[in-house]
Image (cartoon, rainbow, N blue to C red):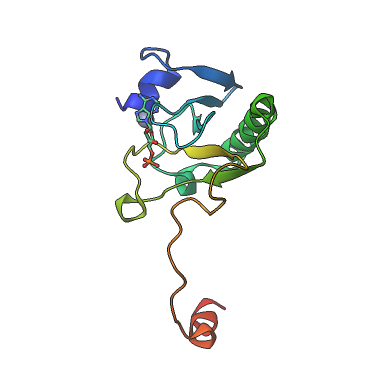
Length: 129
Ligand code: AMP
Ligand code: ZN
């Protein structure tokens, strides 16, 4: 069983700050900012693309509730991010969404986004529609 499944079943310790029927939120053990929280489905799915839409609704409720709770730290913004696949930096293969409160005294840049690349938008667009 994966580590986040164990946390969901309360078999592994975590600082759980919110839960509803199918989602749970707990503090990230290596926080990128004060209050960095992870929101997970209690059931195991490898990433958020695998999560059925009705369960995603509970994840969304959890994200909103967590952001509301984090207001106690007076954040000035949030990054809400989900890494999908190892190339994107996913390390724990149980779907999770990072909720990262951001504060004025930080640099104020997006989390881990690289520089824009040169690409033919016309060609990309045609491949997608
Ligand atoms: P990702 O790179 O998107 O897979 O992120 C995994 C996140 O899970 C990292 O930010 C870790 O710090 C965090 N993490 C790993 N193990 C635990 C744990 N036992 N409790 C809380 N957070 C964890
Ligand atoms: Zn799992």
